[in-house]
Length: 599
Image (cartoon, rainbow, N blue to C red):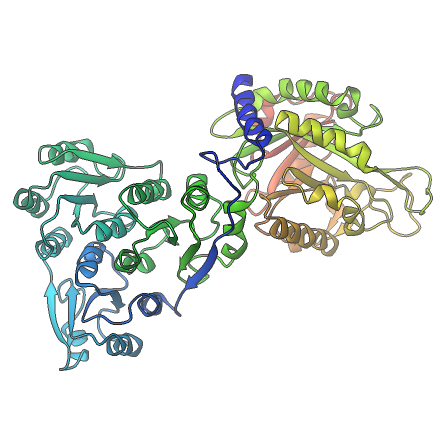
């Protein structure tokens, strides 16, 4: 386990030492963040219209598909690309005014309708009017419809095959098929449909690109395809990783690197229309998790590589903010030109489990961190962290350094807290970076509000590997002293800090930043439910109580969150906990802590 942690650290250190961000490949020069352009309508039908408007000045032929069902529409892209027109969406019973207006703007003379009358009714065709001719491309089922579309395409060297039982792989494959001018055929998981087999027998392709893993298209189908032509399977660990692999394959086959289109992979309507649009521009498509573009990491790194190596200058975001978050405006610059976390990636949890030593730089009396020099502290921390390397999470060793220390005396400014100087903090940041660790600055701010105290350390908080911890135990009201008082903080004060840190993350293009709130009594954090958890931060409530296991378990139950709204922390005291939890016991907690510290 220790070797695995060290391997991750060594990789991060090597790239950091070279002065470039962690990425799949070396970067010859610093790339510029691409221009982000959103193409969206009021809904899925409107988005398809908007995409047509920005892509096509005119089109004599348009493909029309049903907006709320994917089976017939999955294979529309290559046909629309072949006739040089867009894919527009419609509901099943009427043609909307905005679609009719777009047909008029394009000067469309022919509409190809994919699917039978159950998919797109004759009333829609009647709404087209007498000036527009129309024809159906349809079969008895989705596989026959796919075959019927393929029959209308000219001869080509290859075909693209994906499952017809779900939409993500075929959506990802559609733009590449359209770009190549190849049919996109669909199949069942464990059997090649007769209609699909007939197309293959007739076309006799020299190459088959099979999109999706064996859970989508099984080995028996791959064998059947291999009997026709050599098969190249393009797959990833999930729909997004598969889409990233498909986009990479499109780049290998001549896609224009300057424009990259992204669309949500959570639903299908926006991406149904993208195939011919991408083909018309010669670009490529990535399916993304519309809630956060920093995950999955394979996709974020694919976008990063695209900008760094291929010099992509424009990222076209397809769909409204309900489909792809408006956070894309800062997330794209972050993942393309910003720094990664130690160990790689742009988000802390659930990719990492952070294991920390807590203490102060000048004394051993405040925690284990100060009991030895910086590098020795890391070596000791690594030994303690090793048992936590379990499952799919990697351990991120962490120093939690108390930089503002509560004091018995009021001090020069009367706030009962002694701040650290940059010269006292920097050696710990240097040691963290030498070893691929993360640094957290802990505030015991006394009578000073947390935001004012945090700003004191802004030069460090602007760094990609530095987080912040708030310790309400030592946050005092006017007239209070640390002796005999347990402090408290209101949600408004925590939110002010969260908004400040979020601004730094966006401004500096930083990876997600840790914000820890220590707590061992309910009263210590007032109005806790009102505390925000912006995507720029990993807000973590840290159970800070000491004592016997039964007491700590009770405290953890009322402080921890099992809804996923916040991350959870658990603190252990080498000296004050009489029956110290073992790592195995900590990992058995429910919920399992994301952040574990030792004092």
